[in-house]
Length: 419
Image (tube, rainbow, N blue to C red; front, side):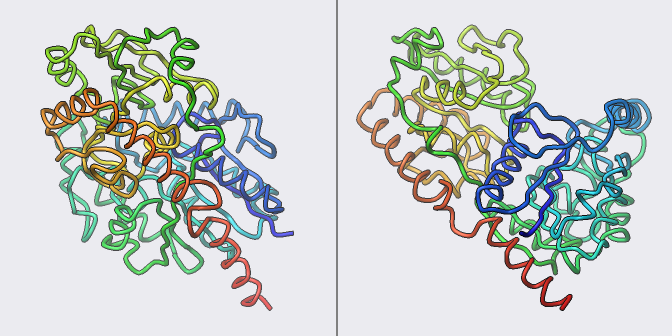
C-alpha cells in the first residue's frame, strides 16, 4: 500500500485551501492509500490527522512570525516572508515513512522556505498543490497585476505602498531559488489562470506542472427548497437575498468586500427588499443597512443551507484562483454574478450559469443582479446550468485528472527509478 503524507497549515475546514486538502486526503483514503495529514491546527473529525509539533511550540512560532511581520518588518497581511517555520516536520516518522509528500497552503509559520527546500531534497516525489501565487513570488500571495516575479522581484508595489521598512521581495525570491530544487517536484494548479502564472515565473517556468480541478461534494452541496433553507436560518422569505462569502468577511479586500457598500447603495434604489448576507469571520455590523453579517458556519451542511437561502451568489474577487465558494454555490444551483477575473472563468460561463462583469465595474454587477432578480425564469435556468456544470466538471469522479492520478504516476516513476 502506497503511503502519502499531506502537509497543510490548517487541518480545519476554515478556508478554501484547507478544505481542498482535506477533501483530497479523503479521496486517497477511499482509494485505499495509507494517507495521513500533518498541520498546525485541527478540529475536524476526519481520520489520520496529526499536529506538526506541541501546542506551545506552534503558538511560539506564530507569535514570533507576528512580531517579525507586524513590528519589525511591518509587511502587509497579504505578504508572507517564509522565514519562520516549524522544522519538526522533517523529523516526523510519518514524513520519513511516506512514499510521496503533498504540500498545500503551508504559510502562517508552518513551513519556512528552508524546510520546504529540505523536503524537496529528501529524494521522495513531491506534489505541491498551489492555492495562490506565493510559491513563485517574492512573498506576495497575489501580485495584484505586478509581473516582477517573471524576472526578479524587488521594488515591490505592495511593500512600497505599506509601512514596510525593508523591501525583502528580491531577497525572498532569490532565497527560494537557492533552497529549492525541482527534480522530484510536480506543481498542481486548480485553474488554467494559475497554471499560466506558474509557467511564466522565473522560479518554476521549467517545472513539471498539471491542472487538477478543485472538486465539490455534490451530495452535500445540492439544491434544497429555498423556503425551507430560509426557515432554518430565520430569513424572511419575501427578501431577495444576495450571498457573499469570504473567510475575513467585510475585511476581505482582495475578495471585493469593499464593493458591497456601493452595490447595496445602487440596489437599494431598485428594490427595498434586497439584502446582502455576508458569511465570514468578521461578524461586525455591515457598512450599510442592507448588508448583514451572519458569521461562519461550523459544518458543511449548514453552509449548504446558507447557499440555498440565496437567490444570487456574489463573487467580487479582484484576483483569485478558483474559489471553493463559487463551486459550492454552483452545486447548490445558485447562479453567480461577479467580476470576470482569474480562475472564475473556468467555472462560470457568462450568460449560461452566471453573469460576469469587467473588473471594478460595480454598476454592471448591479445591472446583472437586477436582470436575474426580475426574471425568475432566467435565474432558475442559470441555476440549473450551474448545478449541471458542477456535476459534470467539478464533482468527485468527474473532474478529469485528479491528485490521485498524479500521485500514482509519480509513485510508479519513483519505483522504477529506485529499482
